[in-house]
Amino acid sequence: MIKVSVMYPNSDNVKFDTDYYKNKHLPMVSQLVGDALKGIELDLGVASRVPGELAPYVAIAHLKFDSIESFKTSFRPHAQTFADDVKNYSNVQGELQISELIIL
Image (cartoon, rainbow, N blue to C red; front, top):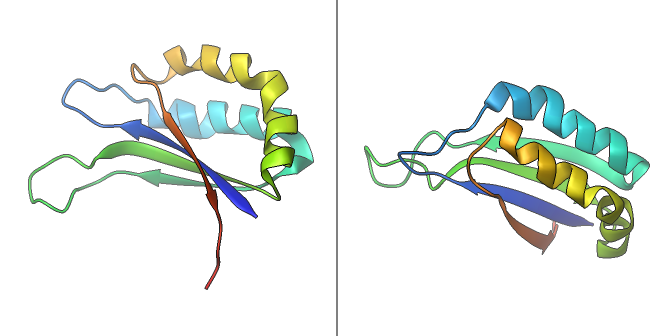
């Protein structure tokens, strides 16, 4: 299984509409990629390791797929739709990382 993490960097001037992201964007992603998506988790940054500093990321979405191939096949046809929606919830672009998911 793999995990696709979309990480939105935090800063003093970042805007991020959590309600829109949680209630509109992620459900749209889920609907469009269909059964290839095995689960979604959303982390909202609240602090960093240094007291008083912002969390490094305002939000991180973790999308789980069986394989890189199933991610690419289901996500690629809708990538532009997802990218076009960013303006509705944030003024920063997410950084994407694909990881092998190992459950201990």
